[in-house]
Image (cartoon, rainbow, N blue to C red; front, top):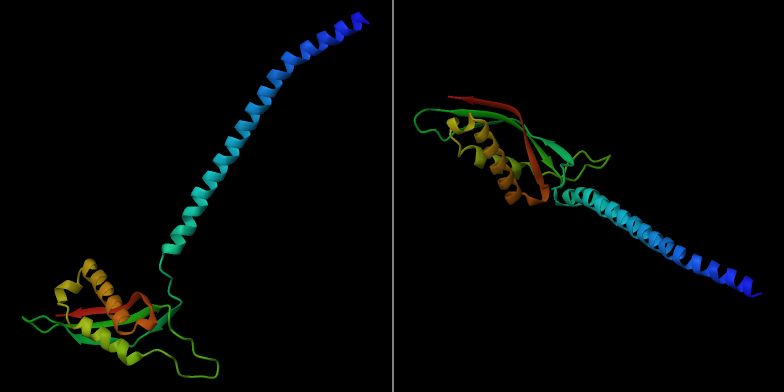
Length: 166
């Protein structure tokens, strides 16, 4: 029996040193797997989280396009007569859609036209002939419209016709 006990002791001794490296390997493997999972989760949050944050910060896109009749305006040139004929469509978010049986719309057209005319008549013809001048005109029109008729929620201006005559 002593021989059997010796063999069992040898087996226990052999299993002891072999078990320690196996435990170290399994712990190392567990840490590597955990690190990979965390890295993948972090990368996913970084890439997918950026899109949702960017989408939340963007202004809402225009829900409706409001077409206006053409404008003909005397420009502010003092050395000669200059005119502007411009067609404008507004990209708005706050306009109410007419109901199926209702022919009236909810847009305040006189206030819209007044705000646009007051901005257009301040420009000189030379300012409107450059792309930068047209961009500045759009920004000023959006600011004036949102100041005078904020319930429209004007987000964009589309020129459908643009003619400067000097």
